[in-house]
Length: 120
Image 1 (cartoon, rainbow, N blue to C red):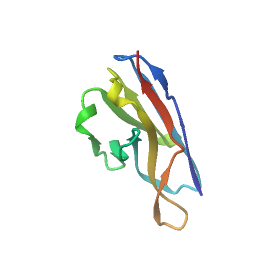
Image 2: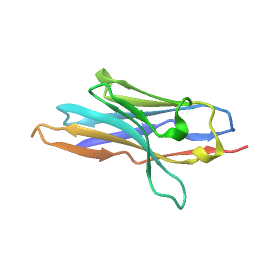
Image 3: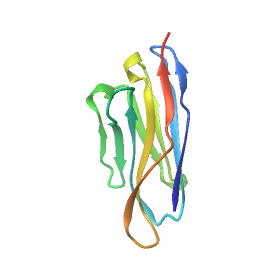
Image 4: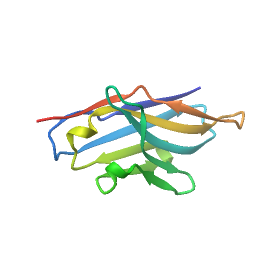
């Protein structure tokens, strides 16, 4: 089994910054991709940013130039640096990882979610 533990959410004023972290642990053979999704009240969960092991990074258009995803492969950790935050960034942010375990079968895992609130 694989666990994803997130941290770093909170309340910030518009224009401020936050850094989210997500650490994967458990029976991990390799991590194919890690990323962040978010879900605002009354809306569907959407992709924010992903980073594959092949080096492909993608962002949703609304965060390009403001958010940066990065990975520390030695720590099985993914980060999301969020700058110039806007009220519309308010959501629960979820970490996602596609992990290959000891059975060599890739599976998707989710973190528990961390609340990000942007408000004055």
